[in-house]
Length: 311
Image 1 (spheres, rainbow, N blue to C red):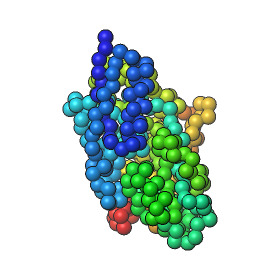
Image 2: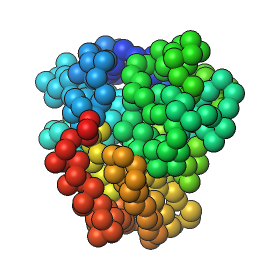
Image 3: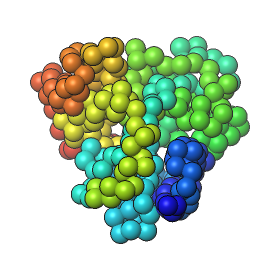
């Protein structure tokens, strides 16, 4: 029997790439089904002139799509994992975590690397996590808020509004802009966002039929790594308003997760890592979060709660 699945998506070029990728993979495996894309505008799409840290936490780019899923207007959605809150709304589950793209960040400029830039050079990024790590590693540089889609940010760099910008490698590769990367930022310079490079394909918890179509897209190592990172996110209560970073890697049956949190001015940076069996991925992430709290992360979180991320 055939049928139609409705897939909710934001309208940005990257969101549409992700949605079309999922559509193609589903239709390739289940040719009797057609996937219809349903554009949905989110809060994060509507507010473009304010730093993300000032307008709320994770969920800015998912809330309206999740509402459409719960009320039956759509059957599934594809989110960037780093945009998904540490707990999914009741009634929604991860149906698949496809194989992850490169989770690292990239620096783009008109030639120089970060360490070659002059003092007070303007570095564009919308991410508080990137800003505080820049302030810590390169205190002479000037992080400046940069919102907009990938193409908008690249145009602003080309126009000379910034000496450099930082973007996720995953998005650049998916949109065909990988050749514009000046410098790949390893984790000794920039630890990536939790979940960066991974996709979350979600459906209603009780929709077993749709889940069956989507499970074939799941990639177990990617799901495991993401589970560890989201455990860390949960332990630290992470959102766009808190500069938390982390990355899990798997070798055989062992998982290593690195976590980082920094003060808003970048002066204090706390980083640690844990290793353990990958079958306990989420527990390892939570344990790392608790260790970071013991090392002083709680003081940083309290400072941010007291003064606000936009201080």
